[in-house]
Image (tube, rainbow, N blue to C red; front, side, top):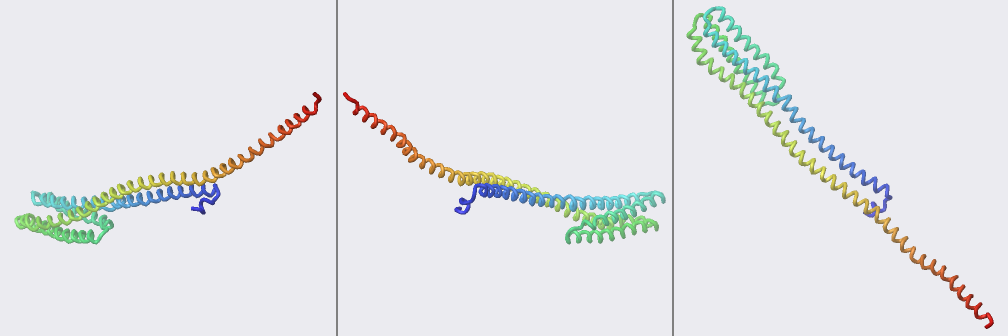
Length: 261
């Protein structure tokens, strides 16, 4: 305290300004850190979870399309209709694999990889059922093909669909978690930034008052010293002014006494 009080006025002002600048810099850095955290969760949701959900939904659509074309294949009455339905089944399952190749680079956790492995297993089994279905109908074994479609084929398709849905749910939950985390970070950052701004304002006012007091105190003391020194000087000046008048009065009395009566 004594060291700061002994500084020159310019040094005191500089110290106060630097303190305010430091508080402002801290507030700015803190805000940037929190904004970066919000951006991280937003990017994670926009570039990881949501694209995965979209691609997985496309995979699910192709699996459902293959199942619908199997229905059409069973109900076909001509060889041309059967061939078109068979080709559509194969194309749907091929497009499924294309979408899956787009999805694989988006996998971001061991759990998600394990779910994708389960999708692969279910896909391979369902594709075998589809190939067996077309083989049986091609050999004229419509009843056996229909039984396969309604029993084993249905069970394997449900497993296939459920495996995809589990992965979709995982990514949806990840997106929800990122969204909630982003909201929590924003809420806490908002409160902390407001608190830091309030602290900065109060600290700036207190620093200004403190420096003003340190600067005004020596000035006030110097003014008091000057005022105290002027009082004796004023008395001496009045005495100097009264002394000639007294001498003049004494000389006047002497002249009067010397005159004859």
